[in-house]
Length: 347
Image (cartoon, rainbow, N blue to C red; front, top):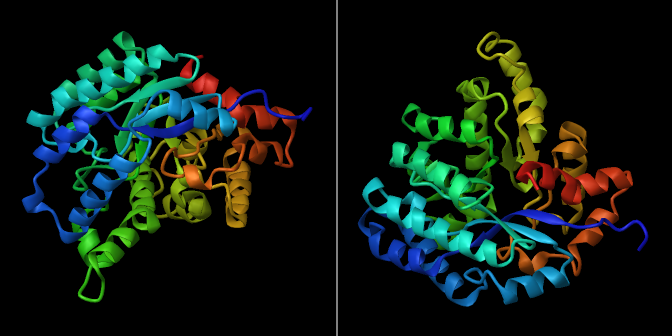
């Protein structure tokens, strides 16, 4: 095809380190888990055992070759040690980052990586960010939307982490996490719902998309993006619902919130954020979401992602085909497929 994109770089692709996953399962405090959280843990154990998520090698590359993916940018999947308390998470996050960096070095033309950090130990997390980028060669930082579903990362105690990232000038990504427990209880649990139904509603059905969107909203509303105006943020699932409410957000902050921030509220998103589809490119409503993101962010702020292996079943036979079919200029297709990603990663 003469107008096919030259290459495809996909962000928000996932791996799990078997050693840290086994340690996580032993260390996580099940006594404080709700039935919904226990259902999630049980599901993830089956998923890790059966899926290709622990493979960073031939099996993954075979899938990439069959689906038109040149390079995956890998970040940690379920059961991240970043969610463990400080005393447990520091060593395990280092182990996971070492594991990822070693596999990236084996296939540097096919993989890049985002580090995870022991966020409950902010000073150690800042040190690990520097080590992961400067010594291990990882290209960015991946967070869960919240720490343990209890704290958003704009909290002041996490300031050393963002100071380090600001100096490193690498992109960051918030990946969905379980919803805040109080919200889960109020919105997604009840005697009419089974634990599995609660899990699906509070999780990837809808709840964690709202939760992740709120995490990004708080970065702007807290003034953190005024402090670090050049911070580069990756946001998945076509903006976690937020682009559909840009006018509403501007209306609120331009009126009652006037003077709180240095920029118009949605300028933080248009200027600092890069939107990813996260594998949601296989149904007509996602065409609409893509059009909205092109209108709100422009082609310079969209990068591609399949959410492998969570969405591997829904990928097109060749994921580049979806980009190639877009009714936009060839230059914009190349930006979305790889040029924006290369710029973000410093390739």
